[in-house]
Length: 283
Image 1 (cartoon, rainbow, N blue to C red):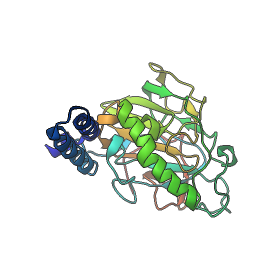
Image 2: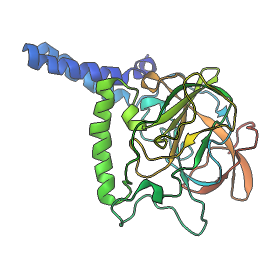
Image 3: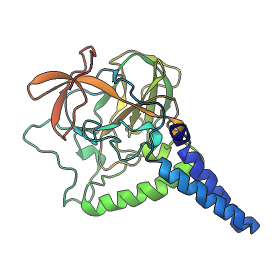
């Protein structure tokens, strides 16, 4: 029961806010009390996974090419981003790291902010991890400067938690201002793939297009709630993130001198095995 209710966590909060403001407009204390209860329930449900348990990882191909670092990976913790919201229970962030001599760091002292095109990930191609049909594609949001210094990261937290989240709530837009420019693919069998923070103007597909595994969908950008250019990727069980539950996945990659099928983690670099067929999952 609680897992079903968790799908509507955002709706609980939006309705709660409406009732709370209704108390101001109509002077009815009952509205305010009901609104606060709904908001509280919605916040609690952010930490409850939606959907059923125990689903095996969905085998897909790697959605990028080259050498990358896995950040906020489900290989390290679940939910990987600290919440089940927007179907991102098993989401992963991929940062392009082409130079083995450079160690990727999540935060730095200087500069306070940098243009997105100064990062190697910016403009890297995003490829379809399986055959599918495009159910959503958007690319109008701007690519902002980085937020990967300590002061800028604090700003990112405020911006994401308040302004972008509030805009998404108010517009019931399935987290549009959180995930930024994005593409959603229907992979069949109730599986939908999300590609977030896409570069403005780079989306090469539109709703209704059929794509093949390996087709280019767009380019990595820095739109939405993002600290630096990277690809946010996850699978979910509904086409709209607002009421979706996250699904585990596995793809082939090369790490530690061997090819594996699973999910890279530990902020360790790996090489995408984009041309390899997905197989049964492993470590």
